[in-house]
Amino acid sequence: MKFNTKAIHGGQHDIDPAYGSVMPPIYQTSTYSQSTPGGHKGFEYSRSGNPTRAALERALASIENGEFGLAFGSGLAAIDAVMKLLKPGDEVVSTNDLYGGTYRLFSTIFKDFGIKFHFIGMENAENIEEYVNDNTKLIWVETPTNPMMNIIDIEACAKIAKKHDVLLAVDNTFATPYLQQPLDMGADIVMHSATKYLGGHSDVVMGSLVVKEKSLAERLLFIQNASGAVCGPQDSFLVLRGLKTLHVRMQRHCENGKMVAEYLNNHPKIEKVYWPGLSSHPNHDIAKKQMKDFGGMVSFTTKGNNYKDAIAIVERLKVFTLAESLGGVESLAGHPASMTHASIPKEEREKTGVVDSLIRLSVGIEDGDDLIEDLKQAIG
Ligand SMILES: *Cc1c(COP(=O)(O)O)cnc(C)c1O
Image (tube, rainbow, N blue to C red):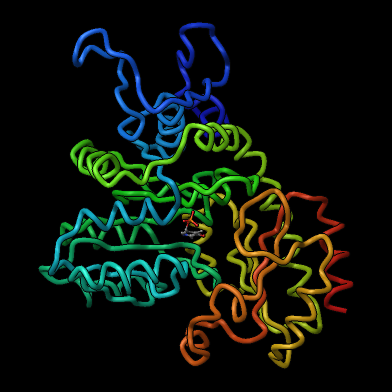
């Protein structure tokens, strides 16, 4: 089955044997009656399993070309479950330009549980091997990265992971399975903040994991139930509904992303544009190799690199809403230095490129002409 068909039908056979409803009912229940102790119809308690969540989890596994999907209460809850595969003394090699919440989870919570992290630049995957030793259990990759849109070669990372018998996990939130399928490239775990493109309508917070291998799935399913950070049936329904238009939305996100990136790239007041589809992007070739298209996330800086200029631009935008988050149908703009990255000291954030004038756009699926007009009036 091809991707566009899977997005709609993947894992959705016999969804409602009682009445044949096309969408699964929202099973808003915590528990299920048993005819005799242990005599249930597949579900006993909704932390362990819920039919609406199960329908979503099968859909997630299908679109990522995996075997097992697991849904959580947020993207960070999904990452938290992966980290619980580890033990004190274990080491993790991770992308340095990470989603801020992931960095916070690793560098505060799990560091205190005795796990050692190496945050490194992975744009050249060979760098990873230098940090792999006998204690290394996990390589954590985010590509494209947030907000600098760096691209990491997943296949090259997978080769290193296999060679050293280390797990490879990929945060696929920015790309979505429409653009890249990390499990096919040799990753062991693919993770999503389903809050973003998978849900796609800025109306739910959710996370997910997909794996191929049964024993790894069993360990993660155990953690999902034992730690209990599951999502509810209503949210499962919303994300399942979102998935059914993922391919159509992503196609438009990519078209509009290209239009916006090219407009900004030719604008006299713009210094730099970060979008993997531009041939000037340092890892454009890897993006071309592993992604079907280049997505709707675009970051840029203004000439003179002035903090106030950037604030004025994001305040003047009308079609783009000034807000955190990304991946919804509506266009959003953010100023990382004063919003998502405000807690990181200026020198630290500037090392990875988060300078004062950096603006990050989540380009939505409105008419592209209106987005360009809006940028034109805001930048001047
Ligand atoms: C938002 C995000 C997360 C965290 O997900 P939540 O659903 O907010 O917990 C992790 N990784 C990336 C790349 C994200 O954009």
